[in-house]
Image (cartoon, rainbow, N blue to C red; front, side, top):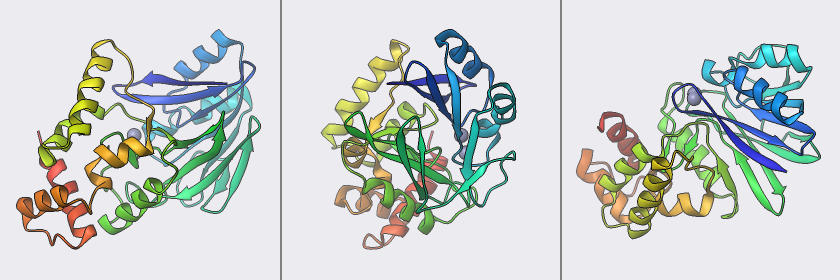
Length: 257
Ligand SMILES: [Zn+2]
Ligand SMILES: [Zn+2]
């Protein structure tokens, strides 16, 4: 099977997964790159998986459903173009012979969900929308720091070899911030160099993995002394309070240039 990040807008990826015949797409904010890829590969679109309601994630849903008859899946508690099958944590769906388990990951939006496939050609796969990015996380538009911290904790607890398919190419900006938080993290310094090389060749930095994110992503490292100390230096956050550390990091990132 093939897993392809189709670039869209400024920095979105519309993830297309196919077996040479049938395909699924995640968060199609725009129908046209998806239709072009389906046409080029002679693929039938079977399913559209939506993580949350933002226009850059759902803008192409109606056009793709109309053009292909694909089934649409999305979060139980958000306004998504109907008709669709609504999902919440504990639900599982089968698409292209793959099982996807649903996780509730509120924070970026109130009803955000993620799709976790425990076995995609021998390793797990995660579609996490705008919750987890490589080196960073989504902004808190509708949820609290405590919710987002909890959601990221769920994702960080997935197996280390889980490939992480984020929906934006924000990696370099995130790693610049991560380096300001943890200048002495050698794994981070090395990964940042790798990503700069990939971007200079015009390649995506994604997918990432959960194991890598645990080592480089400050938002998953709210117990690591270097990170808690940096958060405390930023706004006197209580170093023993993981949510306060997370909230300090999120605030700091919002202001970081
Ligand atoms: Zn979003
Ligand atoms: Zn987005």
